[in-house]
Length: 170
Length: 470
Image 1 (spheres, each protein chain N blue to C red):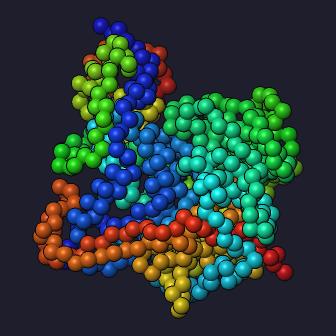
Image 2 (image 1 turned 180 degrees about the horizontal axis):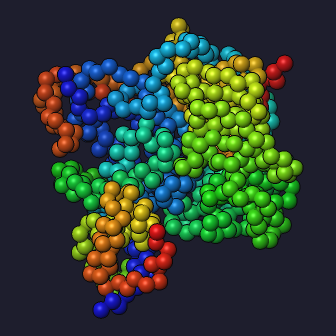
Image 3 (image 1 turned 60 degrees about the vertical axis):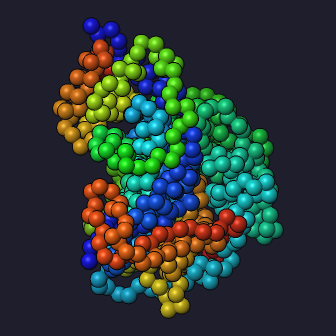
């Protein structure tokens, strides 16, 4: 006898409501994490499916959106890229690209795409999700020192000065 | 050459999120489809099935965890049979007196159970807030999820609903109302934009008799991290995640901290407690005092050793005790252990009397096959009433009203069934669910649980309509 992963769980209408209300925000977060719409859609879908699997654990935290965001960040820097190639992507955005100059006119968005996924994730968590370095460390399962070195390396590559906001970091 | 600064990076990321192209497909449909594909690929061997309980954060959790951009609403709890991973909280008690047979609320308190339509005549979906009296229910009507459009009062005697107020359409993008509160003269609510990083919230009131809603004001920064609200004859009152209670005059004016409320969390006006209900870090702490903000009276709670997550209201406290739930008055008198029950985070002192005991064991059934999803306990009469019903094949669910104070309403949709379907297949033809899992062999059973029906009628228990105990 063998056990093949978890069994299926009720697919609640309330979960559907959650996706309806938060899906767009999660997708936007995915877009900032991955840098492109197709990966963002797939990352969001995958994380939401895992959320559906993990209701019993979410219970204690009472924080499904936090769970999804954490899952997305972890997937982004882990095996997810490998996995997603095996899957049918059902919802590829029609507008597959946008004019980058609408985002910034200095090329920063494009340079961000050139970063390794872990460095990019650290920057997104720090500057988009507004997390402290300790929170980022806990979330990604790495040390705070690694968070700082990854961030420093990334910021240096992007030629971003670190001055004004350094004080708030714990 | 470092020619950019961090602020530029922050602005760019925010702009990128705003400018993200909309996905073409519909996200829900895609997830459903992918899940079905995956379910077909999952092979379930015939393992013993343990009872497991899932709380569905009702769409949006009220918790303010690591992330700041969150919404809130009442909890929806659903129970499912299945799974090998369960919380130890819900492991059935190996010993102790047998669990009581619980009868459905409709039998225990027939005068407090009502059927109401799930939707208004125009198709907007009702969401119960709380009972206004024994015969009146406050509902919101929503055009889409959490986009409240109207406040309505449902008269359970007449069996019909009247509009109390049309809620204003705000032009703030991503605005969601997060909580309602019924005061003596006003009904209040607050809203925020949970999906962006702005620390911002606003407050509204409408006379309890109805009329045009008035915006009281808005707050930013830490003051906007609202946990619960209250409304008095002249002020909006609220507490924030980090503790502390604030007020703002309804007639307009600046917010101010109520003196002496450092570290306190609002429960239900005029009561405050020392640990909030929803903040993650406080989840298993015991409340130790209840403060009346009007009289400044402080009641110390008698906290027995070994109790967990003790949560108190005006009269009663409910907490976890080993495999059971503990119930007592604030001073520790009338203490009782209810074996096989779980106080859970949603245990409350509703109206100074009732505790909604989160989870009823492992779905053990009465002789006639009835098993509630959860129970409401009345410590005065020592009576339990079953809420919702476990489906024989899968599970069940219920919701609680979305008022800021503990709601007097629990509700469920009896038409909604969770149907579990299984079939036997040759495992070898199925690919593994993901690369990390072993390739299935031999014969296996593929199961899926689907929710069907519902959407027509809600069954509502209004605890304000339970007859007083002698």
